[in-house]
Length: 167
Image (cartoon, rainbow, N blue to C red; front, side, top):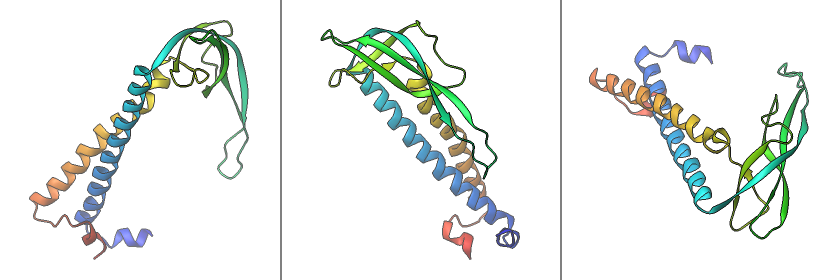
C-alpha cells in the first residue's frame, strides 16, 4: 500500500486529499443539517415538563484486548416526569457519561414528543445540539480545505478528474 503512494506525484496526492476533504466535508454538512433539522422539529412538536433524576444506571463497556481498551463504567441518568395527561413516566437516558452528568435528586427540564408521552429526553444543550455542532465544525474545516486544494491544482493546470489519480 505504501508503494502505491510513493509512486504518485505530489499533485496526485493533493488531488486525492482535495476530493476526499471536499466530499467528506459536504457529507458532514448534510449530516449536520439533518441532525439540526430533526432537533428543531422535535423541540417544535414537544411539550416540556419538570423531571427529577432518580438514579444513575451503571453500564459496563467490556475491555477489548484487540485494541488495548480497558473496561469502563458509564452512568445513564434515569429520571421521572409527569406528562400532560397526568401520567408519570420513568425513562433512562440514551447518553451516558463518566462521571455522571446529573446528581440523584436533581431537577431537570424534560422535553417529550406530543405523539409519545413516554419518550422524554432531558433538555441538555450538548445532548440536543452536540452532534450537529460537531459535524458542522468538521464540515467548516474540511470543505474549504478540499476546495482550496482542488482550486490550487486547477490553477496549476492539473486535471481535477478524480479517476486520474489511478492513472
